[in-house]
Image (tube, rainbow, N blue to C red):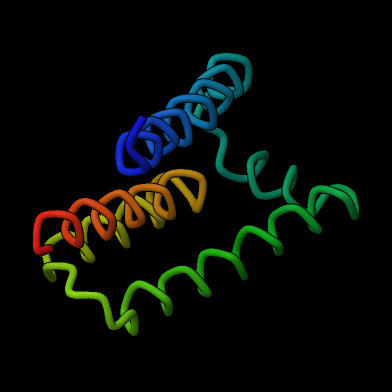
Length: 107
């Protein structure tokens, strides 16, 4: 199976699984923003996970913006949007899919 297809599958999985968990949380708690943020800082392990994801997202966005591979700007923007709206679990494999796919098409 080509790497680009694996990256695309990982991007879909990276969007579906986190959002499924988030939807279940919303069904149990409603759209309670204060509870959401309280849950983030409620205990050290939750805060650790969120800080790790935040730093990873910043690093990924920096990588997408500064990467020298010839990936079209609209694909870079889409990857950044996916990172901000879904997370690194979707944004990273999506960018790698675009990068791999575009590199293969150019060669």
